[in-house]
Image (cartoon, rainbow, N blue to C red):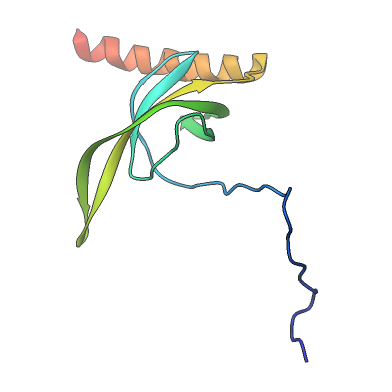
Length: 118
């Protein structure tokens, strides 16, 4: 007797899927076109990703394509050493609203950078 609430079916070709990966990133630089960041998860070149950014009250979700992903270093987290990848992402399909929100974040970062250089 099967205990599952819903019956499972075998998949024979044609169906694709993806998993949304949640991981923290360390942003190196950012523009309206894309960003460079460090992450402890491997992202494949030409793969799609979604980056969620927030600063203050401004939040934006950006879709991107991985342009470059290379092993950069390793990082000790608790008792484990994890690989650190440097990833370059090009933003795609940015609506005017998302561009505006991204520009607000960039402007905020620029203001913080300008005040530390003075």
